[in-house]
Image: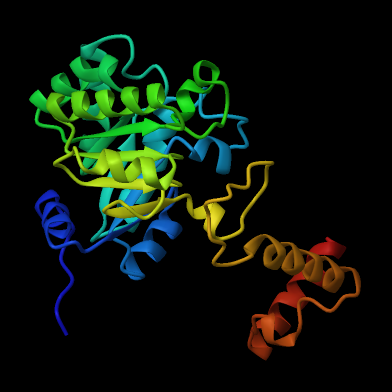
Length: 288
């Protein structure tokens, strides 16, 4: 049996060259990261989407660097082999190159293999600054959740010539600026195919069809762990854990009310002489 090795940038580039697609999931905690690692998943994104899936936030806008630090520390401990990408949250990189490098460095110091940021040509200087600091940068284009107010909500991108031109201009700009690979979100498959023709580095998709070097999905979505209103069309549901968890909790509640839990097999035992001494002491203590 071949020993599994850590996924690195050269491995990802080689996968693209050999047309072998990669698997990419989000994780925000130790357990999910460990399960992903043991399942042989190639990459983990510690996404700012954790603010919604784990913290109940309505969007990713209010996710902080401290939130991302907490998520990332847990994920890094859980994974030995996956390539780990840490999300730079809203306003952690937009203000200045210095902020961008500093915060990217904080994620790398924990154990990330790269950082991800949203935006196109306007973020070129940030990408270059981070790259010059020796930190691999992943670009995120298409539907960018941190810019929902600007793009008008959760809308498919690239459906017009002008939108395609902007996407193409942006992805070429960020690649030139130093982005090591790209994530394209919610773009029609045919448009993704046209963009793919023009990029050199790996291009991965989330809701952008099959003409990419690999797929990303949010783990909560593919596991059926929905707690909000967002239910993306592009996600295949591999499990329905919401129903399983709710049923388990309901059964637990019923067992307690009917005095069916705990059973004898759930109890710890004590030797007879020790119990006798405890009872005698307890009875004497209450009398005193």
